[in-house]
Amino acid sequence: MSIGAVLDRLRGEFSDITISKIRFLESEGLITPQRSPSGYRRFTVADCERLRFVLTAQRDRYLPLKVIREQLDAIDRGERVDGDGSTRLLSSVKSWVAPATDFSELGAGRLSRETLIERTGVDAEFVTELRRNGLLSAGPGGFFDEDAVRLVEAASALAAYGLETRHLRAFKVSADREAGLVGQIAKPIAMGRGAGARDRAEEMIREVAALSVTLHTQLVKAAVRDVLD
Image (cartoon, rainbow, N blue to C red):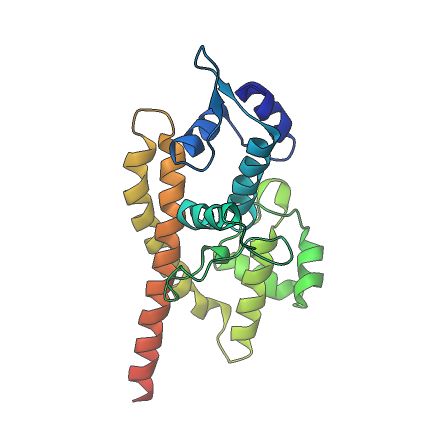
C-alpha cells in the first residue's frame, strides 16, 4: 500500500492521523516500510497493523514512544506483551516513573451532566460547586469525558474527609502551574520547522507530564511525613 492508502485505511479509527504523523513515527523507527525503486514508501498489511498498535497505545494508554518501542521490540522477539492483548508498561521501565497510562486522551467520552452524576453517585449541587470553583468544565456541546468522571470521584472521596470544593482550588492552581511549565518546554518544539515538529512536542508532553506527576506525588508524600512528624 502507498502511504495514502494507509491513511485512508486508518482514518476511520484514528481521526487525527496524518501523513506527517506516519512519517514521524517512521523517523522514530517504530515502522519501517519498504521503498520502491523510485523512492516511494510501500506498506504491507503487517506494517499497517504495527502502525495501528502504536496509534492505539498513544490514544488509549497515552504511552510514550520509548515504552511503545520496547513493547514492539518484545513482540518482535516473540515475547507476549500482555495476555489480554492490551498494552502495558514493560518491566524494563523504571518503577519510580509514573506510568503514562495515568493519562487518558483528552476529550475521550461524551457524557451528559445527568450521566456524570449517575456514574459518580454525587448530587447535582456537588457538580455545580466543582464547576463554580473552576475544578470541572464541560467540553464542546456541554458534554463531559471519562477524565471528568475520575475527577468528580476523587473530589467526592476528598469531601468525605472534610475537604470542601473551595479547598480543592489549591490543587487546580498547582496543576495549572505544572501545565504551564510543560507548555514552556514543548511550545518551542511545536513551533519549530520541519516535519513532525508537533508530533515531537506531543511526545515530549507525554513524558514530561508523567514525570511531573511522579515528582508531585513524591513531594506531597514528603510533605505529609513532615506534617505527621
